[in-house]
Length: 264
Length: 286
Image (cartoon, rainbow over all chains, first blue to last red; front, side, top):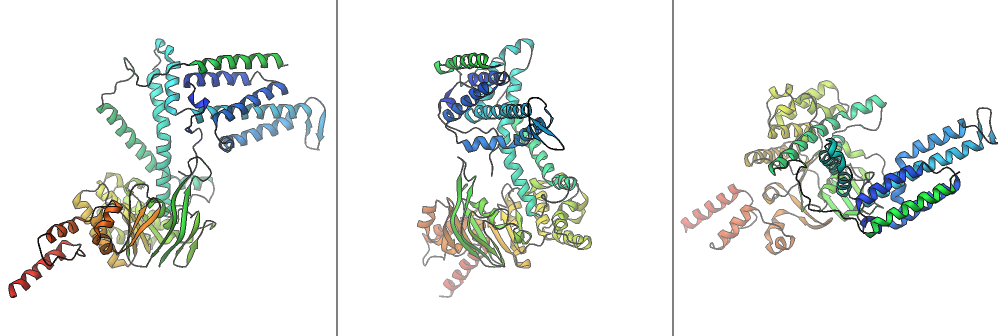
């Protein structure tokens, strides 16, 4: 593997790593709503400050966060440009024959890209500090009440953890097949979009085949160990809320109060 | 076409917490036309070396020269990629086309070879690997595992590489299957005069086929020389954590009882039998 898959868990032992995954998941989920409450410079500053503290606490290098922003950078730039050009209001800052940039446009562009940035970085903090196993465990337990209305929560969580588990495996497999076809002179980099898509067929077909093979093997292995879903199933690793997990409630309430106070 | 590996290192995921040096300061010369075996445990850097030799990776440091072409960390397009054929592990997993014919012709087509010539090459390749021509119009997925592997091998041979890299070609084959594949490799080497780089875990394969053997450990070369040299010194083998070939083990056992000892440079059963028969004759004459 030559590059990091987005959202990869980075092992560590920081405060954030040690938090209960359920608490983290809930907190980040609620935090996403909080982002949309921010509507002026001071509220955004608070959010930025909070994210910066989280990055510090996670003890993960900033470069990795920049890496996770990269894929959405295009969307951020595009929406910013659209806001700069289209939004009217306030004083005109720059006038060209084609378009005029207004004060309100700059404000909107800055706020929208901030929103994106904070969302992405916060999601990265969650996935960087929580293993996929913990994450699906947490999700399963948080969604437990839905079992009452016959939502197959355990099966969904299992599907998710299998999917997450196999991302690196499939990635490795893709690299292998890609190398094999490159060694046979496959040309993946030039030509128009249709030619390039066609050039990927010799990679996708073996990849699909091996995925099906893997899925079948996995199903067989599970069945051989008499796996039968969630009913009555006990767990080896039990999650337990501790003091620091409850402190997240306080932190969240403080954030809500501050943003509620400062928003206009 | 000689290969010169000059003081190369290779680092994976540079600048991340997963950074890992797979090869460090490795040098190696492979003369044209020999069979070079590469052995080493999992994670010793074998696969990385294959990637570098086949022109799929660039060294982080140092240079690789194949024939006239030199590749360093900054080389943009690797010129020797089309001269090196690679048969990766479980090559049957990379088959994709509807028919065997189309799959074998994939490589030569990419090389831009005219259709008529491709046809010749496909027929020649399928003949080389010992498959019947009637299979050409079948789907590769309807074949047995051993046949699929031969098709994959034919797909590489049809590109007529002057250097052929084989990554554990006998893995997962039964004894007869691997035996056939090994004699195939042997014949190929004699007929086509190609350089063969054989990555393997089987000491018997090394003993029987290789002219030169490189032992990798944690990304470094700990031995490079002839198989006779490698297998004759038991203390070094023990230090490397390696088993001698089964025939060498047999000779060692025999030598406990026979005097003068049988030379440990014999790697074929026929040779041992001939040697013993010769000794018996000499003994009878005396």
